[in-house]
Image 1 (cartoon, rainbow, N blue to C red):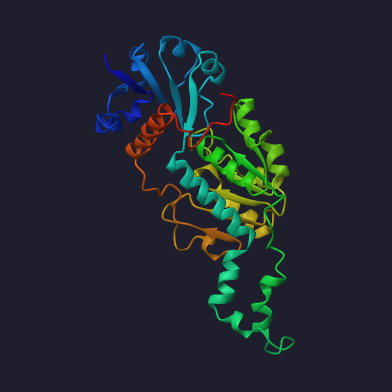
Image 2: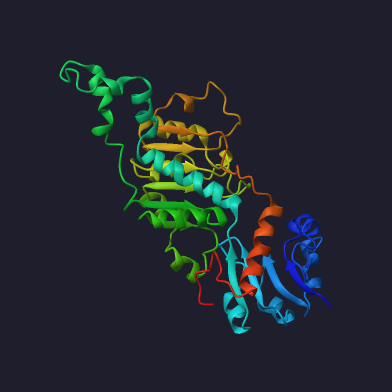
Length: 336
């Protein structure tokens, strides 16, 4: 009987079929639907890869010979880590490029807004920067060229607070990056994360209003559902600090775009970095295109060349490395 690697989420079934035979000595199995997942739990499963499928003690009890469980994504809140420890199973995570690509764009927008990059670019591209040193007391070009030196919009992100609305894989990857750069990170989510995931970053859980009122940067990373439709509107902008900067890398419909434009025009918030809009592509006559406190990108957040097959292949490579005795490339920050 061959040893098996169970890929727990049915959305990866095509990748499972494509990669069959990729790792010598192991058979890849995957449920056709998520309802079929329990039928594949057996003693010949030695490896488990899961993205969203819940992996709890009841599941692990049926996997009596499981050697290694891998979370596809570093937000492993769907895994019962204590039960994994109790069963003596190794546990690690696999870096997903899709969520990382979006998180990188969010961090890029934060850094771009912190350096007032749009205005800084214009001062050079317009030629004004070349006028430095020419009669500063008489030259408007001089004043424009050195706008960046006295620009109060330019600041460090170190010591600033980032509030993340929604903390799935994208939000968690963004939190890791922001924390490394010295930002404090708080989050709002319907279901609070396990303590080990909070402590690993670290993260502070807050109510939505508390987080909006205390954050210097606010990043939206929630799915667009009826419950999140226009969840950030006029009343939420009133709660925000007047020097807050909004970052949206999820979906345009999560924000009341009219209320956001008004908040930007009236100085209720300082600026915005936007990758998504109510209507895409953004209409040429949108007021957003005429604001100098906004940076716009054309929904490039998910622009990773890595396919789901590629992500599963990375996970299988990680399985092979760890089973072979190598250290995990992206170890989970839990006691395992």
